[in-house]
Image (spheres, protein in one colour):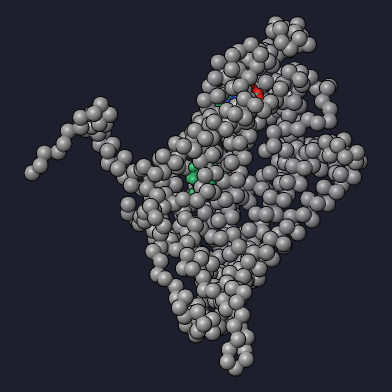
Length: 566
Ligand code: HEM
Ligand code: HEM
């Protein structure tokens, strides 16, 4: 038997040393052989991942200079001159000092802040991608829930970070949080005292937020991202529909060397762009706002984009007078509804969505091929409606800016947005659903009759027909939709002997929901229809020579892996 070759290079020797002690080589080989499907939208998760890395690196730098203390100090720095000698918290003073005195300090602060905006933005877009393509279906429901938890943590990271410098804007944000916490029935005032360590603002909130911001939240995020990616590798990535792609295989590139090289390149591009943004685009110049003081807040005070919707919802609520007093406890509906109940319902609905959808479809199979959004009109419609509601609320958070920029009455704007909040999503849902059904009909038409070629042919009997070009195999694979889920069927209320059965009411409710999802649908293409259209059609008589070539299901350089196994 031939002797195994010993490695000769330093890297090879080190790898061999490690492998002999940990057998890590098996894992590396296994991972390197993994096949990853490719699509631009799969980069959104990567952008979230890499901007998180940049956040950790820049945040680490900031901790070296930021002082998480509310102790009153006199600002000693020369810049900016108007702050020199003023009293302020150590947190604010250290943020300004870091920006003007520490080399690279302002750059790092700006990189950190831009990365936070891009981080949350890419997470939200990534979530939309998962939602619209149905990537949350079995077996990925758990990863959907982990993702949602990470989104909430990312929002918390953004808010706690934004609050740290203790400037006018962040102080007012905290004041709103204080109001929201106090509005929680029964325990609100106690909670506020607990959180702030006494009457707002107290002396404890900045150090507490600091611990949450640099330790608890990033720690949880790191653990959850690890689990998220582990599950993704374990379950293998989904793939878009296309020639040769089924629920049983994975068509894409091998992890090593193709995917690893791509990911490394992406990391440097993302880190580079964030650095460029930090270097060239000013953000959160806290010295212009000044240290926290409740009096100077004025028009033009907006939070970071991902908190805008809550701020906007607060602004849309009818006046401060909407309060109920029950048993001596006051319920401030103007705070409770927009800041707690609406986001609570939103996140509960998002969390429950994969389970609701599986229940109304009765589809509990595994799915690895993604849906085209048009083939799920109600889901797509709900997604667009949520997006519109989010945008209207976010717009409402800029009602003061709209009023000053366009010389409009702020109350008229608020009323218009209140109406839009109810009408906009319903309209968006309806339009989206119609567009999706229209696109499905178009797909059906194309699959059965091909593309219009613009060539008109006259037969010997005088009949004119337009020649249709049959679809390429790749395109047909994409457009054929054999499945179009129908509403649930349930057992009748009474059995053959007229005995009423239990559980009918609940079944009927699910059936109604299912009808809402699937009553309105385009009949799917049947294999028989497809065969008939392509064997007897007049178009084929004309275009016989255009017989489709058999295509290999995958493009050059791609690999095919099995889902069960390697
Ligand atoms: C810190 C935030 C997050 C990071 C760093 C992250 C990262 C990633 C990455 C790198 C992937 C593989 C590439 C891709 O499909 O884009 C992925 C897949 C996935 N993510 Fe996330 N994600 C985050 C948040 C979320 C959220 C908010 C959700 C949903 C609520 C989610 C649900 C999923 C699911 C279901 C998959 C599997 C997708 C598939 O196989 O098609 N993730 N994630
Ligand atoms: C998990 C994702 C994170 C997000 C979304 C985030 C977001 C933010 C934001 C928006 C600010 C305000 C920046 C400004 O002043 O303009 C901030 C400040 C800060 N962050 Fe983070 N951060 C994250 C992670 C971290 C980590 C991991 C660390 C430490 C290792 C850190 C340390 C800091 C420090 C010390 C400040 C205060 C300094 C300052 O405001 O300039 N952050 N963060």
